[in-house]
Image (tube, rainbow, N blue to C red; front, side, top):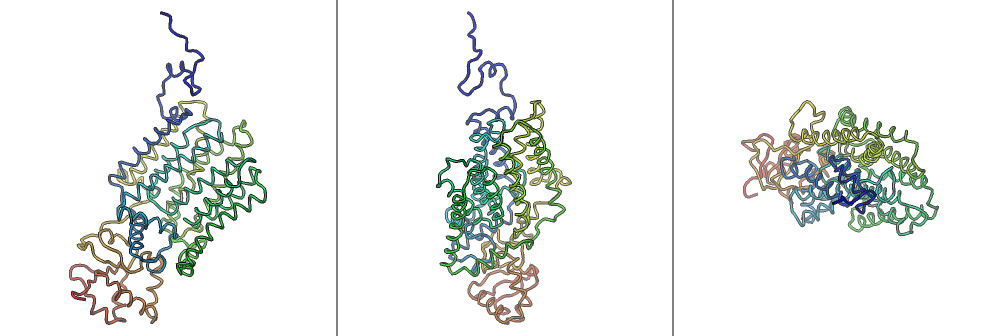
Length: 497
């Protein structure tokens, strides 16, 4: 029997059946280069394979995660942010922590799964640029794969944080800006401003991306002055609602002092030294530089694609300024460079004519990223860890026998709260230490004494050697608290007090 001739026939997706029969997909890059929505299922499986073994296994508890859980727990006890709980996080993130605590309690897995969902959404939404707007030479699902790989390479990217939630809304704005044209409705224009406003409300340093938004709209030259005002009005409306909320809660002064002023330029606390931050950035910056110049050397891009490249380059420059306005300088801020890295690396891989070379490069990127996160968590090769991320994690307190107690820790180490309850407002020690530095002032002593009498912490862990000074000035505390006979710098509430 004569074989049927399949030459020229297709499978409904523009691929010849002859090609599919003779050259089945044997590698990752070829798999995601096919413009088929089912390829997202493969990306999702890879995402689960990268994250779930560590999420459900030995991934360490970060101090920021513990602080978020303590914050949500306190806010659910009718405490007020900036007054009863001192921290520099945004009110919007405080609400998120409160809602998570309402439904899940102090359960770290819920925070990590929400971070997993946020990164997955970012990857999906960012990939829409490459499918719907043809910003590169091919329609591909490679950006989604690269996005989840790069966003899994550094441990800080795995936790739910204001920066991660803010980046989610920046990605929404990015896709809307690139998709804007003369037929874009006012509702879509208004949505760009709303997304930008929510991003700023979650993480104030992202206000620098307003410059990126302005330049991006100029580059595409499809927005008139009225639409600029509409975007500005939408973003200002979101922030105005936030201010009205703070005013209604009688928190305007505290909001301004503890949140807005905490983001003044060059006043951030360095949780990682500059030299180590630069060393961590060497590989991604080198890869980005190679990808950028390889992409710019290609001569056959249309004007729209060139404009998109300019917008992404401006995004990268704005991401640098985020460091200047952040209250804490930490590796997590590098996530704002991920969209730019994904964009130009995708463009570079699609331009490589030797497919085997592109496959090898893709394999190296995936392996280095996955091995880096596993090495940071498990210390297979400690010498390769430029920065010990465990310094940002909650370390179990040695020989600390107390659990389920109302605890006060005088110092930045929140690890003691893992099995205990937080009390008194001193959650963020960088704010609290300025208050405790004025123990020679009557008003400060009166405030502290009232807090002790009202909340009565059962255990006080004095890592800053402040409690003896305080008790000398407030003799009543000597009657209420006795030094522990077993642990140094630990004070216990006297029985029947």
